[in-house]
Amino acid sequence: MKLRNMENPNVLGYDLDKETLTPIRKHVERTEGDYGADPIGDGMFRMVPSGDVVDYEERCRRLKR
Image (tube, rainbow, N blue to C red; front, top):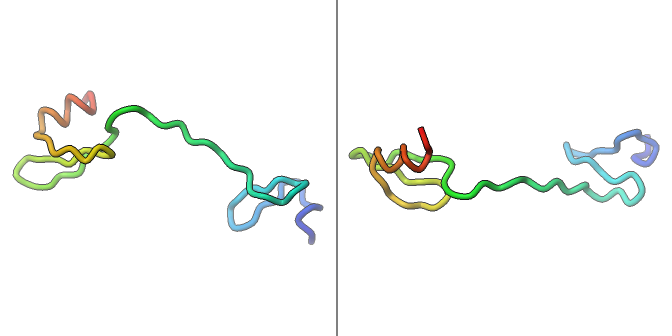
């Protein structure tokens, strides 16, 4: 079966433009500020994506929890 004959052509999970057979790019909305934290021990956390090392109270404030 040819890709152009498919109703919604896709390869390896990527949707393709039916005319050019190039991947259709989808933009992801980015949020401002940190959206996660990884524990690093001693009650400290590394914020994601900023990389700042903060304590538990600051982590909660930044994540608004």
